[in-house]
Length: 517
Image (cartoon, rainbow, N blue to C red; front, side, top):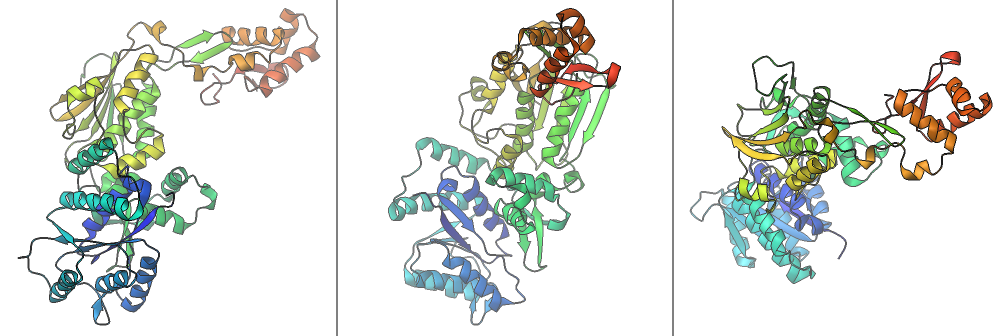
């Protein structure tokens, strides 16, 4: 079965905002459920309940499963029934599978209409589960959906690994990111960041995304919610972290403090400092740039290539920073992520220890199954930074460091921070390896060059530039031939021309970003 099943989530909106967002996030981030299900949450304007009911029922009619959450409030009336009660009736009428979850025990005081709905549930016979908190709710919903998908839709159950990852993720999940806050409206968020997210996540053309597409995509991923009372869309806590121009204005802990020191110890007088406060995808990019400008970049001639090397592998640093943002303990409002660049190492420190059942020993051995405190943030950041959301992040960091010619990263803790330490090369810069992806002249391109062009590229790699006059003098060719050889190298994007006339020179184009070195 290739098409996803639409799951209609029905409840009183205002009372159960947290539960609705949590279930939406579960369906979007759980490895098994996200492959087979999509959540549908209809957000309505209570000033027009009749039209709201019409919209709710229309959305419900496009769904295959009805998921009901009941609390203490009956909700907005549309005639004699509340909208939630009317949705339940429509689900029965359409003979949809019904999954019901009741918050609290039987002794809990509830509005009269809720008691009426619960009696109807008892009389109709669908079994329901009770829950006391959002962790219990997630476990019950996942178990019920897994059973339903197998029994009624013939979908094979998840593997034991998928079940274990789900269990660990649910138990580790923080309620921070799902908070439906009213601090920032949808209109105050950075919509270009949303556009980048939706473009990557859904493989769509950025230019064809409407403002409605952006709002829908952000809402579906638990970054935005609708306040029916105010008639406004607002950012959830996760939405603020990812999409606010300066999340630290709402959450002071949402920033990276970066310091670069001349020696091997923090001395209170860093040579460079930056308090990075942007939306988190941009903050990570700024942190990478901070390391770049405070570390060494030796030049290396490899064959016909003149390559600018990085002291540390950029992708390993990016992986560590993404992990720090995605998995930090956001409830700790007094501490920020710290990035420290020393003469012999780079240290990334994130508030909070690894969530249970992860341990330092299992992370160091690379024998662990992933879980995240903040699965929505982890999933969204994976789209921005092209890192794997689930799995072997620390193993990849280790491999990237070893492939770079450095020692493997060291994992540890310090006063409540989880730390990743990247040991540097010290004085042994010659030990840094050149990644094949950094070679401008690959064997395939070299095969297209004539002998004169190979000599030209070798000279540029050695001296930094070449002129047509040098070609005429040292290759014993006429000016037209020298010009033709140089233009061919420019067309292959190996060289770039700078200056004009007698001042014209040809330099290597940087293999990484097109900048002339």
